[in-house]
Image 1 (cartoon, rainbow, N blue to C red):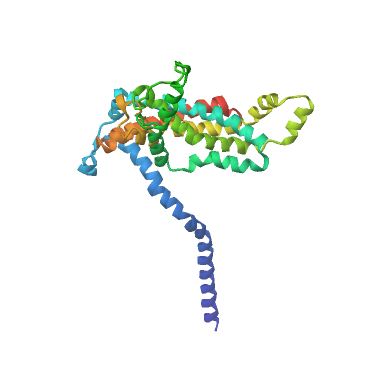
Image 2 (image 1 turned 90 degrees about the horizontal axis):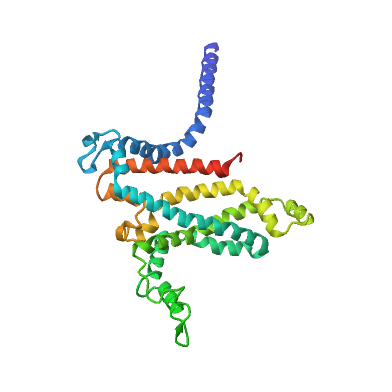
Length: 324
């Protein structure tokens, strides 16, 4: 009888042991799918691209054909005139599309916040639609709008340029009288920048509007009692309190614009346009990898872009981050 009780007691202890063990392991089992997926599709490609950036490799030859070249891929990329031009194009496009985004989005958000009341969500939704619309669809539509021969943009501009009073074209000094070839290098960057601006200005407006809604109304009421007008309230209250959101929004713009790919790729037909005027660094990386099959140099380009983004983000943190 005592032997039976002892065996039962030992079995109970073993059961409690595995129960305690299982309760400790269970949380890790539940979260393990995320770490497995992240390791396979996130961490491994990241580390492999860093490893690959120090090798010369053509995938068709297999993994065994990798050849260690050290920093040659980085040196080759930095000395490549086409890469230098693509980086220049990227910075120009980033400035031409990024600065107007925030210059328009911030006052627009303030205007919506103070003027629309119950209609605010509807107005914000209208501005937000371009951001959730397919990039391919947007780029194709604007390519048609900017067409030289039958685009609506040229039709509108030339109709203004050819507007006459009597025999005099009164607006010809401001608007063109003949169709503009938007595919020319002088206009390619402007066209791409406008498309990117149009797509993301609503996104930044939503960011700034969400920050505006967190500012206590008591501050504005106190400022009004002290005699501050709307302009003074915007300059001395709104802007300083929007600084954390401005840092976040500008950081997203820096990251997104330096990785710009879809809009210039589709608008220029994947070629970068005449004289490569619309070719960005991301496009150059894509062409290097999947057209020229030089995955080592393409990986080096991706890490150079990463370092550029990191440097600009650090500068942005110094300018807008502060102690926030």
